[in-house]
Length: 168
Image (cartoon, rainbow, N blue to C red; front, side, top):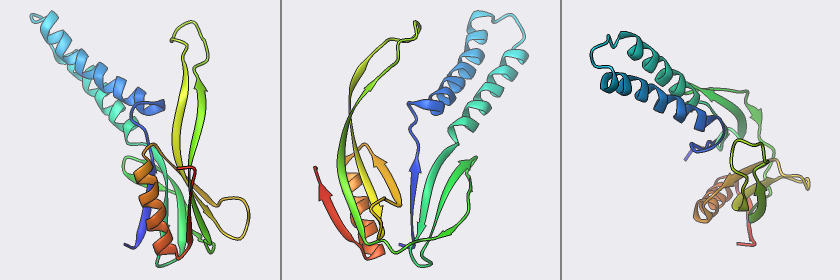
């Protein structure tokens, strides 16, 4: 393997949820007008529906990520839009240690009078990449323990770094 590409995207939260809602609204506009107004022209609802679907798909195609090129020892934080990543390559410092750990945090939805107020505990698994400093150079967040461990081992092998598994 020549590189590792970490894509930071969640389809059920944040702006990606807005993209899913636009696509659903576009489909609903087309189907709803065909069902509830069969005697009217479908031209406008189809245009509106297609525009909403295209806009939603464009929103869904956006995400951030990090690419690490193992052979050339460089890394790039990027923003991807419509499949094209925007970002600059930078030299990768010598990674000495990779720490994979479990993080438990409490999240709360702020009461706003519209959406329901809820709170709960979120379990995340993180892979931190360290060079000589005590501050991690990269941090990758996973919702799946096995994926975090697998990524930590893959990075450890290719970057020739020590792997430390904690609080798992």
